[in-house]
Structures are given as structure tokens and as C-alpha cells.
Amino acid sequence: MADMVIVDRDGVEHTVAGKTGVSVMETLREVDYGVAAICGGMCSCATCHIYVDAAWLAKLPAPQGDEKELLQELTGRRAESRLSCQVQFTPDLAGLKVAIAPDD
Image (cartoon, rainbow, N blue to C red; front, side, top):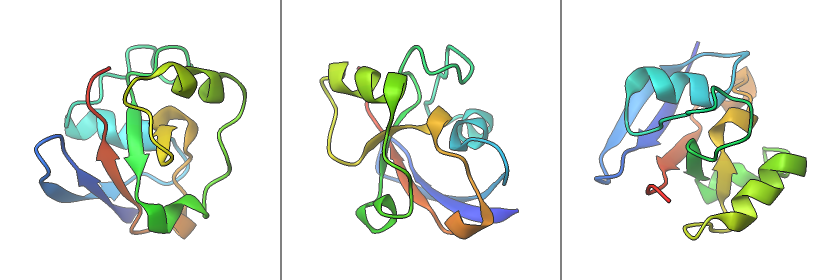
């Protein structure tokens, strides 16, 4: 496992053990900082919306397909927006910092 830094909706940073080989959403759902992930990772609801710290954006593949479409519909969308169900946590992402986006 590798650590991940999560900024909750109150702006508090938490360092948690991320699970490699699964989506970031899986870790966020377990720590209960406000990610509902209603669709369970099927990329159909956008309730796992996060903001990826700018230092990490270049290390992730760009949003594609359904994720890109869902992000475009969010009023809270920013350049660093991603759906955490579409970001696979790998050892290369040790230290990844994300913030939980507000409910949309």
C-alpha cells in the first residue's frame, strides 16, 4: 500500500493508506469523507467527484468518454476535476493528493 492525501470538504488534510490496483474511489468510500459513489464505480453518477492536486495531474491519463461527459455537466467542475472511480491508484501515485469536491 501507498499513502494518499485527502482534503475533506472542511479543508482538513488526512493521510490514508491507498489501495493499489483499485480506483481511488474505493479508498475514498472506505474513509467516508463525503464520496457517495452511488453507482459503485460504473462512471454514471459523478458522486465521486474530486479535485486532483495540480502537481499530480500530469501523472494521470486525461478523462475519456463517459467521465469527460459527466464532468462537463458539473457546476463545480474545474480544470483539475476527475471522477475518482476512473483514477486507478498505482504505486507510482504514492502521495497523490486529492480534494473532495462539493456535492453538485
